[in-house]
Length: 255
Image 1 (cartoon, helix red, strand yellow):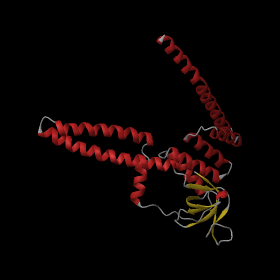
Image 2: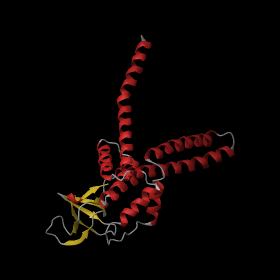
Image 3: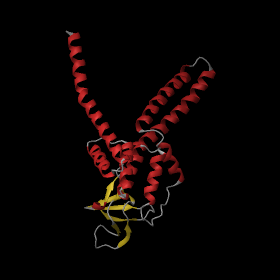
Image 4: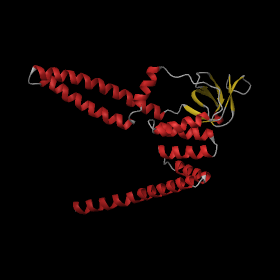
């Protein structure tokens, strides 16, 4: 009876995976079709297929990157910047994505000069993007195990030398574990953050959350902003030069 139930379970498991496998195969075929359309300079057809895949939940760095390239070729610079930024968020260390993002940003007609973050914060951001959140989690588990082994050596080592080594390595692994824990948390928060947006409609930065307020400056399509507050249908944003103001929520899309 047990063998029969096990057999049924295996059959049901296989049958359940067929639709998922089939859907994955169909998505890959359409992705390749879109890539071929892009190679044939049929950028609009490629965009349509890429967009369909995104709406169906097939979000990868490669898909976002290819869609950014297609929009760039059709001179939709705002959308190109948006999807390159999303690709970079998914794969921050990719030099090709970074290069194409810089190329698209250079097309944005902006006079805003970016004020860089504090140097230590930039270094920490670079360190946290070395691994994905899952990668940091695996490293945390390994460092935790190594710490426990070292603590065991320190407490129950056969000689003074073993206990000294156990204490030293245990302290080191514990410190590395805390750093990995912080980096993983930081990386996950940055990936989940919905605070950064791209301006997709020509708009203005206002001094207050309504059009009767003073216009501080024009915001070109493709400008990157950080949303820090919301009132009704208005976002309070911070520009790359750290200047703050208000824009209509209809003028930008979150990365």
